[in-house]
Image 1 (cartoon, rainbow, N blue to C red):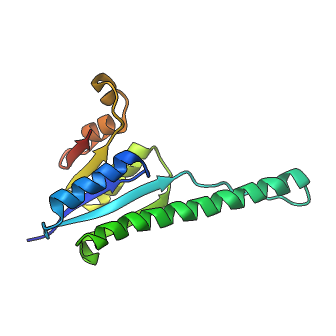
Image 2 (tube, rainbow, N blue to C red; image 1 turned 90 degrees about the horizontal axis):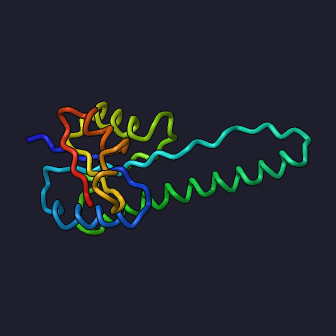
Image 3 (cartoon, rainbow, N blue to C red; image 1 turned 30 degrees about the vertical axis):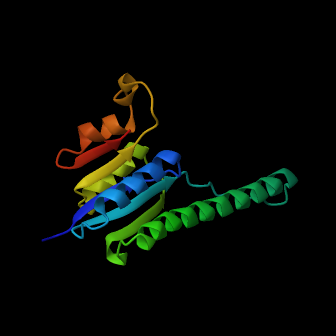
Length: 154
């Protein structure tokens, strides 16, 4: 039997940790499921500084932001390692860390479709239920992904 693939958008929040706890508590022994932690980040622009002092300082700031991005990727790898440390095999857990090219919902949908994912596991901040489906990522995915299960953690 082929493994069921689950895409887990990850944004380094408390809700993401709850999703990880849910995965560990529910799917640890289900060998037929594999998980991909997914994070898209805003790409940093290239800046030509020349001899301009102001742009030189900006380049320093950009280098700092690039270090921060590498740190985020390390955190994502750490989340993957947490699953591995809790009994998931290497083949069952992957991660994708990529620069954003589109709207976040479109990035998730495209990855889910191209990667053949069977489920997208979303989480959201607790708010009024009426806001949940209005112009939200979950609402866009519900209308876009027709043959994909979408699990929304509250």
